[in-house]
Image (cartoon, rainbow, N blue to C red; front, side, top):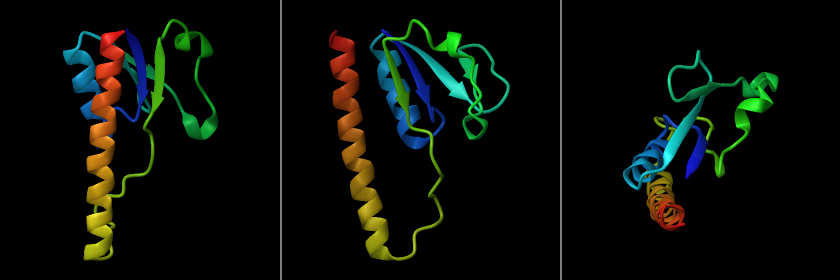
Length: 102
């Protein structure tokens, strides 16, 4: 399976990439810097991407977002973020297993 992932360097994206690659998927990363091997450059704030580079993928996943590390205000918020992260991990593992089975 060919998968394109934005937000590939983040916590969720990097975990999903590891799972997908372990299952044999070909993963390409959308990056906001100069693209290297296995990457496609994009500039989401300027709506700039070469549409032709998006052809041929079985799935396109967008995990790009703002880094929230270091911004936790209190213990309750930290617990909520941890619970969300655990649920996302479980969901992503199930998603990766589903894609790998197809």
